[in-house]
Amino acid sequence: MSITHLGLVAGAITSAAAVPQVVRTYRTRQARDISIWQPVLLNIGMVLWLVYGFLIGDTPLIVANTFSIACYSLLIAMKILYKDDDKSTSCV
Amino acid sequence: MSITHLGLVAGAITSAAAVPQVVRTYRTRQARDISIWQPVLLNIGMVLWLVYGFLIGDTPLIVANTFSIACYSLLIAMKILYKDDDKSTSCV
Image 1 (spheres, each protein chain N blue to C red):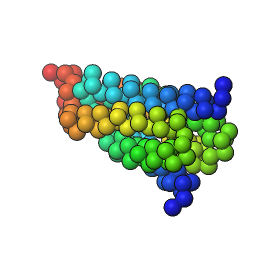
Image 2: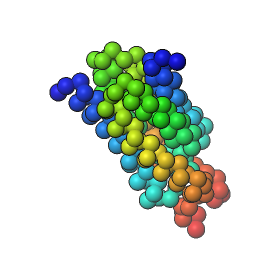
Image 3: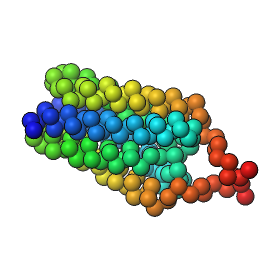
Image 4: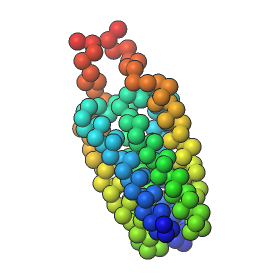
């Protein structure tokens, strides 16, 4: 496995990490325990990683960060949309 | 600003992103809405990024990933420790 392949696998896994959180939040419509600063800071940082990736011509960095930015943008949208309301029915 | 500095700033911000989530989870003792797969996959991927960073001799990647792995390990520990119990007192 070449170094670039290792970077691609690393990028694929860290990018994929956003997916279960996005899916869970979409399914449960609950984002109470999620700090909005996590996806916001991640997106700011990943835009810079993306620029860095372009500047050093690093494909894994470019691909991974583009995908992650899309996922965390969705998470930010859901956090705002679902607010911090508790939608569980355990008290009813 | 050199390219390495840009990478360092990007790494600092994406690494810092873990902090508000760790702090919020520690304060509220609630991790119900967090998918454990996010920090688990992030850690697996970031160990590979770390190896990748060492192989290409990239300081921003090495520093950023070491810090993030520590933060997300704390988050995983708290997710397991606090389980998915609802500790809110809104129903009492």
